[in-house]
Length: 304
Image 1 (cartoon, rainbow, N blue to C red):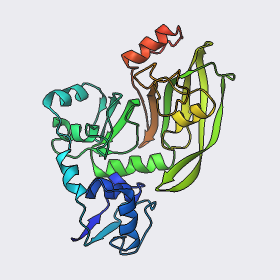
Image 2: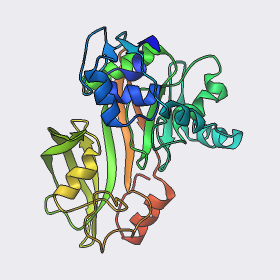
Image 3: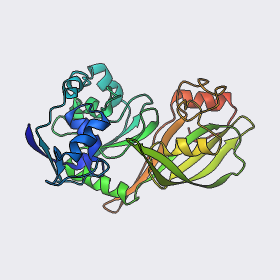
């Protein structure tokens, strides 16, 4: 197989190994590394590393590579029912000619991947809203995190949003309920977080400002505004300071706290940005389970 692929705006800023998994199949990381080292997969006709981030119009060259996993990936592609499509259309906060804003539910991925079948992009690709266009994912939101999410309706808008996110011109506000009582009512979480590329450990700095909305001896409801955008940033940061988020089994290391909540109590509450000199602010209503825990824990939050 000798093929060339042009990178579109959907993958701008995304690592090439992720592109390979999404487009060539559920390929083990070791096999990706081997193919790149051997020059069987190149970027712009040159050898590259798996950590290289892509830009729009990059050309990925694939030479004599056959991945059996690709067949498996095709078989598990998500095909949404009309009912699922309607359910997600009902969660739209705003719909205009260039993008939609959705109040994403917890438990649904943004894009399909090796571990996620059900995802927003596949759902909206079958919606009448995108009958004459294609949905573009322009930012990340964890599968288990609910709240505000933007989907672009065309390539130019997707490129614009990707650029705004990269330049930190889009401001996101999250709400979280964590275990225990935070000592300070506001501050900055400034920590080094680890991630792995194969066996290689990479350390990245992360910054988030926070403000306590209400608290008691059992838990804290807080507002969080990430400055950087690391994977699972807010979840990791709160875990590091000993206040993991309710429902976060991945970063809750106290066995007594695990499984007390099924849903992750992390919600993308608000997003703000300016496009063509016009200010946009979108808020996503809290899920029922989030409101319920606020009530059970006797926390105060007026802006439901």
